[in-house]
Image (tube, rainbow, N blue to C red):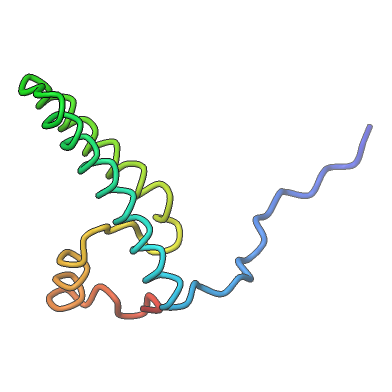
Length: 100
């Protein structure tokens, strides 16, 4: 009979948290992705005269939010909206102990 295996343990996270500069850069990139998708969809709808394309514009904005959050969420939290970040920092102590 084989010996009992040792229980699997997850090693402690040894990597430091991202710096403020890298978090700000990640937010900038995520916001760029959001705006690129959203304004691109609006541009196509207006240029082609597709006023019935409001659904497509809304879905594309949603995909832009999703893509931006997935792309940079692991670095910065993926707020993609500076107003939300500042509001959380001001009224809820969001950044207390988070490294920001």
